[in-house]
Length: 116
Length: 112
Image (spheres, rainbow over the protein chains, first blue to last red):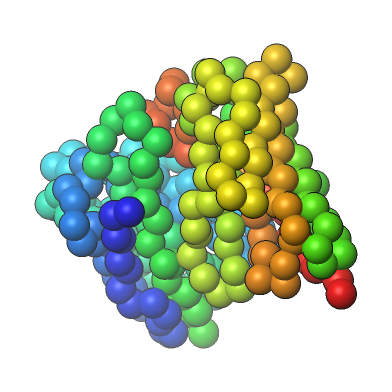
């Protein structure tokens, strides 16, 4: 199957700073990328859907000014957590889809963010 | 609405079959999935089934879909210690830009 990478795999930052997480599709062009967050022992919650070259669509309750998503190319999407707080500590997972109407959606390995 | 539900825990004896159940509410789903997540890791797609199918078998895995009752199950035959993980049921919606909705996950533990 296709490969999706995330960088970094884990990050620790201080409260009030911003953190950028990258999601890359390594061997296919991802027209759509999805960002999820997962709290310990909980399910994945979809945060936003991004299509290359257009603004991301955020799920209800997700602050778009706090979680900035950029999908500048067909192989890269970034999630920036701005002015991070301890409650933003979570596991962030991206997924990428190259074609509509098919089952394929490939998940990255996740990024663990800890805000101190 | 969009909702996928699973029981939180399942414990089985090594060598027995495990059956993990899932119910969903959105009838517009196109694909239904089972993902496996081991501690600290990302998601691994185990198997999927198209919404017009009733059953799919892949080695030790059998997926059953009852579309009328909106019920999906995953059977793992001859469960091994390496099967210990959280299993997520998920559905892909045709109505919402192909986003995937996940269940809460079922933690499968294996006892000797």
